[in-house]
Image (cartoon, rainbow over all chains, first blue to last red; front, side):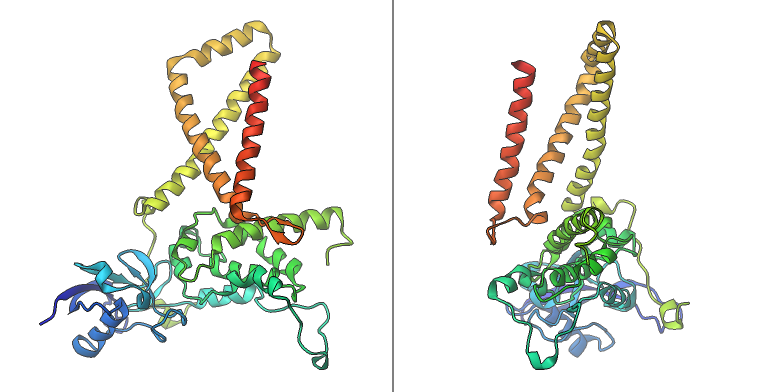
Length: 248
Length: 132
């Protein structure tokens, strides 16, 4: 018999008469090559098939297996059990989001916010398809590439106390993505986006706690993006006041 | 209107002492608190200006008040917080500012060095103003 580690997993089953949020202990094999997600799959397959959680790719790109591991927002596929030994390991649904069931949270709020910041190329005039692609140099790509690496795993929202205290905050990932399009040489929608970001709930709600960037598994640095967006928003306001003919 | 499904969601609230749960949150709260001490220094500065404007007697009174041991203790604590405020602010600058010179991005370390150099120059100028 191999060594075991205890996973203390949050359970919440809304279909029960009086659903209660509680932690349940499961002993799973402590294998060197197992991530927390493998432990959860072991529970689901061998110990308790009623456990619900999201996962897909197991390689840190789909962004669906984010959970709170010992209180820290982490991708469960990228967090290894041996690093958490001897345990127990507390596994809870992502903080700051309502829990649908067990380890599954509702991300509808984020989906609405993401759409609000218009994360797509905005052009004053669309060029005809026959004219080909909008070209871009590697240096122009380099300007925003970092901010385009987001996998929407929501770890930054779980780490952000501003979002936790005030749900109206647009939040780190959505602002980082808006900033990514503002920096894109093919895009002409920065004034439009900055106007949205400067509204209540936008960039000025951020107090630069910086935890979103610490939690980000892809090195996006959303906190940096938000501060840069603040600067850009302030400059945009000054420009439109002093040089109204220059703002689009 | 929330759906019957949403009505059964489990909603967690952030505890009042959320910032004690993680060291980085606590540091952040100290940084936020530091702005109160920055404000205190501003008030002291304004009081000094008023005392100077009111003449030598008022100025002497201001100096006496400032020499009070309790005021000195408060000011030492305030100075520590103001330094924390300034250092954390300066250290965050390279992440908030992307500077380009001739199309090339200036490395974050250079921006940081620039901020501290600027700070040093202003401090030296003020020191020269006071001492010189």
